[in-house]
Image 1 (cartoon, rainbow, N blue to C red):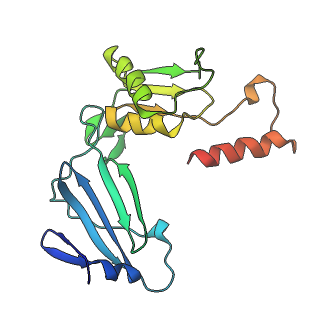
Image 2 (cartoon, rainbow, N blue to C red; image 1 turned 60 degrees about the vertical axis):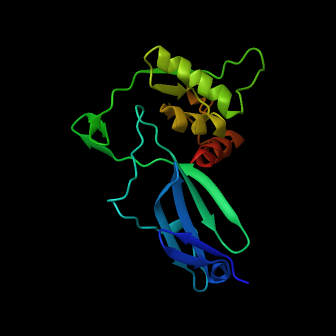
Image 3 (cartoon, helix red, strand yellow; image 1 turned 90 degrees about the vertical axis):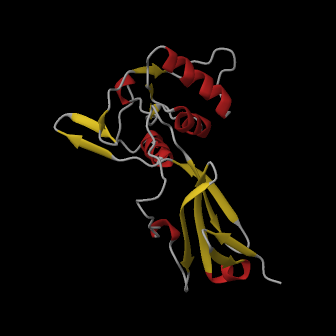
Length: 196
C-alpha cells in the first residue's frame, strides 16, 4: 500500500521518495513553498535551489513582523526540519534597507557576562526574554563582543524580530600576534568558519 501526501491538489507518493525529495515550508497552516525534487545519481543538496511563486502568501521577516516558516526536506527514510524567514536586503548610498524600508540599528553589546551561571543560556526562552527586554528599551540589535552566542539565540532573534552581530573569538588587539605559526591562528580561523 502506498501512502500519499496531497498538497494543493497534487499527490506525492511515499514510495517516490526513493528517487527524490519533497521540500515544503509552512506558516499558520499555509504552505506557500513546496516542490518535488527529482534526484538522479548523486546530488549536492547545498547547491539545489527551490523556486517558488512570488504571488504566494509568503510574508517577509523584519524586526516589526518577525515572520518565520518551518521548512522540511523529506526523503523516504528521513525528514530534516528547520526554520527560516524571507527578506530582501539592499543598500542605497550609505543606507541599508530591509524589504524596501530603511533600517536603523539601535543596539547594545553583549560581553558574555553571565555571573549566575558562568555561561550564556542555551535555551530559546531565555534568549527571547533578553531580546524582549532590549526591545522594551527601544533596541533592535545586539553585538556579541568576540564571541558567537548559542544557536538558541539565533532562533529567539528570528522569532522576536531582533538583529544579531556575532563575532569570531578575536584577541589580536590584546597582545596576541597573528600569522606567526601559532595554534591561535588556526583556532581563530576554525572558530570563525564554524560560525558561518
